[in-house]
Image 1 (cartoon, rainbow, N blue to C red):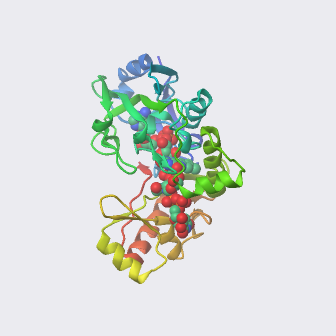
Image 2 (cartoon, rainbow, N blue to C red; image 1 turned 180 degrees about the vertical axis):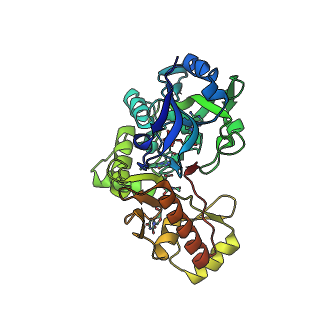
Image 3 (cartoon, protein in one colour; image 1 turned 30 degrees about the horizontal axis):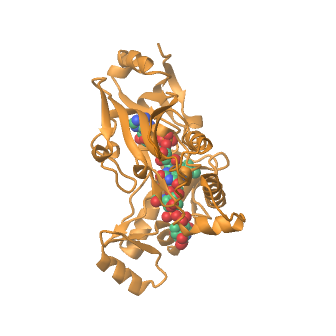
Length: 340
Ligand code: FAD
Ligand code: EPU
């Protein structure tokens, strides 16, 4: 039976390092423990939050409910084909640890997603992505438990409705399903994705002539370490906002006014704008308000300079949203999950 702790401080369990208390806190190490927890009055009578690595959420107040820390562990091979392999990871496995394990086995597909913080179970939530790859590209299926009925269900890729930093679990099934494991379809061949310019440049800098998956992973790790603040040094949750999508007309109008605009053409004819560029052009890079700041190297990242509250970060994000909207007429959307 999992132990239930009262008035638990979550400061060390969120990468913003925000002090927030929850009424009840429990860790689950097996599905049986989750079932036992489901039968408790703390579970049945209050709202619940599944917590992975706490790297994509912001507590704006104490959490009046039960926080369930997912500690389900285990990696297994489901099926091997000539060139491909299905690998299943339990939701509480550390994401980067899992990526490193796959690289060690020679399984290709996840190397561009090296060093993303958090757990495997949260990866489908927002279809994590970086350096030209999203998990939808290697996703096979996931298993999830209905949080009211306890029923287990398998979701295929189509059923997850993956999009840019989107899935069904961030929308209609938010707080409805607990993802317990994810299965990935990886390649036994050294199929590389170095389409993202920065990777090829970094491989060149590293002096790599014929790259393998380990080299790509190392290149990605170098790039990330040079750009993104380490949460251990300065609290943050990666990109706070999504890169906004605008129509071709809006893009053309903005480009005429701002020839330096950074944007990428999408297959649907729309354009994705670099939100970091928009924020920087508004003169907000480095702005500090009550200990919350726009990171001075990457404007898309908001940071806790030490002792700010979740509300301080939220208010700064509101300010950024308003200024960018006033200047460019573009409404940014938060990527980080706001809790409280
Ligand atoms: P948490 O923050 O614990 O949870 C996030 C949300 O998912 C919450 O709403 C939670 O309730 C829900 N959730 C968590 N686990 C489950 C589960 N098992 N079942 C159901 N719901 C669940 N993201 C990217 O996509 N690309 C990046 O390049 C990237 N870089 C980052 C860099 C830094 C420095 C940081 C701090 C974050 C970065 N992120 C990035 C964001 C973050 O790492 C990912 O979103 C990650 O998948 C979050 O995992 P987590 O376990 O920490 O989730
Ligand atoms: N830029 C600026 N100023 C800034 C930041 C960025 O002008 O302060 C411009 C630069 O021109 C740069 C462009 O924006 O070329 C894009 O910047 P970067 O390559 O750093 O990527 P990003 O769009 O800011 C996205 C993801 C990251 C992911 C990287 C690499 C989103 C919201 N963010 O960032 O994901 O790691 O690309 O693929 O899509 C996350 O989701 O938490 C995250 C870190």
